[in-house]
Length: 63
Image (cartoon, rainbow, N blue to C red):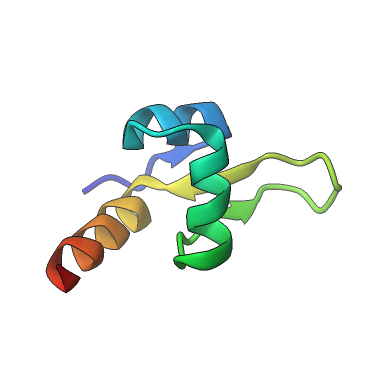
């Protein structure tokens, strides 16, 4: 696992193989652990690769 930070919705979406809208839904309704690097309303959502991997693993264990 890596602690590299994926810094844009496009990068997160590409890593997951989904659209940016789906990433927003995952964050809002399914517990995707995203965060903002700054506090402004236009600050991009980010995620640590290790957190993304853990989230994906937890979803696959639920099925």
